[in-house]
Length: 284
Ligand code: CAA
Image 1 (tube, protein in one colour):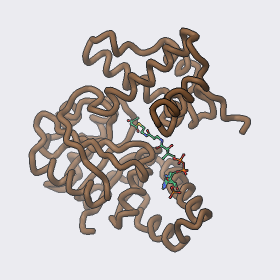
Image 2 (cartoon, rainbow, N blue to C red):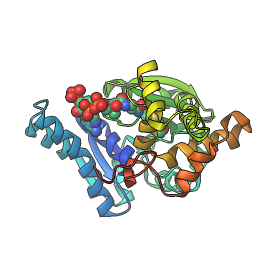
Image 3 (cartoon, rainbow, N blue to C red):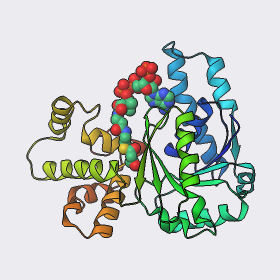
Image 4 (cartoon, helix red, strand yellow):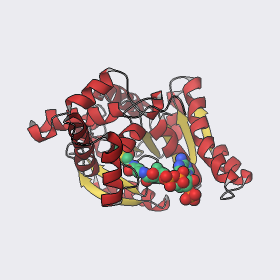
């Protein structure tokens, strides 16, 4: 495929993005700070692929070929060879800036430096580098190997060349890119996350049970998952963080985080990843 890809972060989005590129034939390096995190990322990749083997949708040879295109790394220096670097670390501006300043020091000239942030400012992340023209948002959706969309987000100084390179790569991945100018929550999360937030308000007011709110949205609007199933799937902490960003960036009370969402996050009810969110997954 030509381009070499370096993914920073082997969590659910980072590993899903690495898998997406490897499935499309790219050589990928998947980086995290500790070997155990990288190993866990490989587990998140092989698990769903082996389920596809069980269903007769893939062969083990195909799975092996995908996994073998992904090189593990705990050394930032490995980013030196990459044509495209995608960061998928914590949704904290200070962490992102630190990553981009380190990438700036090692990446080759002209490499595209992309962030998978779901709502933070691309311009502010880019300002941590000496090459803001090469920095762009490439926002994948969970599960990245399945979801068709990538929001390609221009920061204030992103060049047209960088935008076109990022959009062309989405096409090579078999994804559809939409062009977005930086704004809090971009397009999808500005609408989707407030909808999920409102579900928490509806539950808090006792209007309907969690099960019935999910059922209503699935059967009434053909959503594949109800808002609480989706919140548990993507992480309540991620949803709360997006609401806080929308609220603080705009000052608009329509983006006020639901007190019930806040309460669940404070209780550690973060969703499937910890076994309990709106629903309890611990017994089954
Ligand atoms: N790798 C490869 N294939 C995978 C996979 C993975 N990680 N996960 C699922 N699949 C495949 C399955 O093998 C299956 O393939 P076939 O149809 O060929 O059998 C297909 O995807 C569907 O999966 P399942 O049969 O297991 O389950 P499902 O039909 O219930 O679909 C789902 C699961 C795709 C997650 C579906 O429920 C869905 O689309 N949910 C909504 C997801 C969504 O809205 N995501 C966006 C979240 S918002 C976000 O991400 C933004 C943010 O910043 C927080």
